[in-house]
Length: 226
Image 1 (cartoon, rainbow, N blue to C red):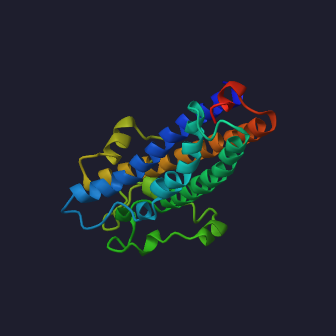
Image 2 (image 1 turned 90 degrees about the vertical axis):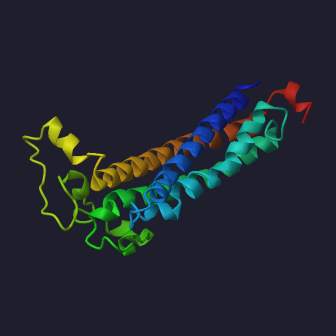
Image 3 (image 1 turned 60 degrees about the vertical axis):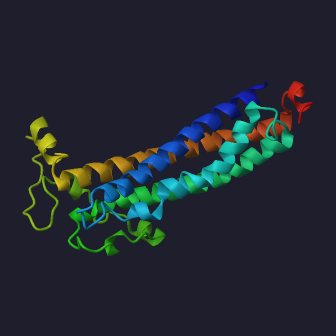
């Protein structure tokens, strides 16, 4: 096995793990919604854009399949296969960018429980045009910094000079509905953002490796079986 084949196999396993993580992260708020039968509102509505299932998941599967095929005597283990593995990773990058964009917008907006329109999902509309206006006013993380983000209650901001560990624990109490929503929302979309970044890094490395394998060739011992 050449260096190109070994790195391709490693990238395939890494991307497969990231695909599974993306699907798990995206499914978490959906499963919570099903289990929390008395909860009228979802945690957010950005999970319904399926950034982890479609963006970081399905769009990366062709590249994962082609890369893992290099571990066996399969179609990836020749020059054409290496070239295709590079092409398929372009779709992986596009899906990862989509996953990152949705995650960033979800983190800026916060969970629905922090929105004045708690009973509406209008505030979760995803649009690429929203990213052209990002500035000091649009990048609002008060839902994360406030002691309580529920609109019906007065807002108490952190005293950044005197915040204690007990204050932080109280603000993210998983026993309360607000605490659960904020914790799950932050964990899910921060996790999806990291998954998207890592997928781009692995995909870029595989594009380079794929072109090197296409130019330099692969193991002749294995090429006999292709």
